[in-house]
Image 1 (cartoon, rainbow, N blue to C red):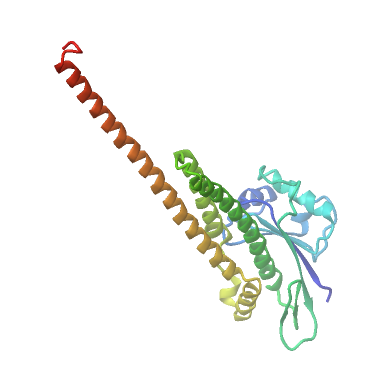
Image 2 (image 1 turned 180 degrees about the horizontal axis):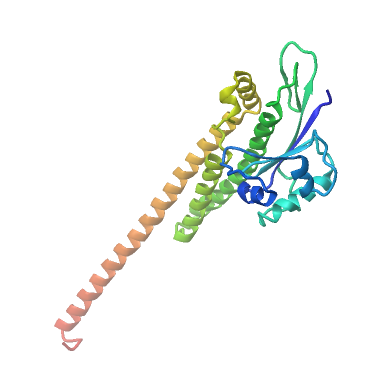
Length: 279
C-alpha cells in the first residue's frame, strides 16, 4: 500500500462548515466537533479536475484544513480560494505560515511506530486518516494560537516598560483592547480547537481511541494546551495588576481634585470675611 500523505494548514480562526455544506449540496448539519470531509464528485465540483479515490480534504471548524494525498501547491491554493469565498479574512498570501506535513505508512511491524514526520502501522484501518488529520489540524491551530499569545506578551511588555519609566496612566480603551485579545485567545483555544474533545469514533472503537491518544501524546497537544492555559492565567493576573494601578491613580486624582476644590472654597470664604471679596 502506498503511503498516505497529509498536509495541514491553519488559515483562520473559524470556518462555517454549514455554509460550505449547503453550497456543496450536503444535507447535514455540522457541529463544532466534526469535520467536513470532501471527496469524490463533490470535491471534483469544487476543483474542476480529476479527483483520485485516495484524495480527500478535511475542513475543521476551528480554521484548519487537511489535504490528503495532495502535493501540488496550485491545487491546494485553488481550494483555499474556494474557502476564501466563504471566509473573506483568509490570507492566501501566507496560507502556509502555519502548516505541517505528515504521512501514514503500512508495513509489517510488531507495533505502531510514531515519528515526527510519519507513523507506521501493521494493518490499515478506516479511521486512521480522520484521526491523523484531526491531530495535525489541532497541532497547526495551536501553533497559530501560540504565536498570537506571543504577540500579546509583547504588548504587555511594552506596558510594563512604560510603568518602569513612571508612566502610570493606562487608558481604559487600551486595557479593554488588551483584555479582549486575551479573552479571544482563550476562546479560540478552548471553544474552537477543542483540545480535550475526541472524535466520535474513539468512543466506539478501542483501537481508534488508543491510536488517537498516542497521536495526541506524541504531538504533545495536552501539554501545549496546559502551557497556553498557564500563560493565559499569568496574562490575566498582569492585566488585573494594570487595572488596579490605573484605578488607584484615577481614584487618587479624584481625591486631589476634591481637596483642591475644598481649599478653593475655603480661600474664597476667607477672602470674603476679610473684605477682599464682596459677599
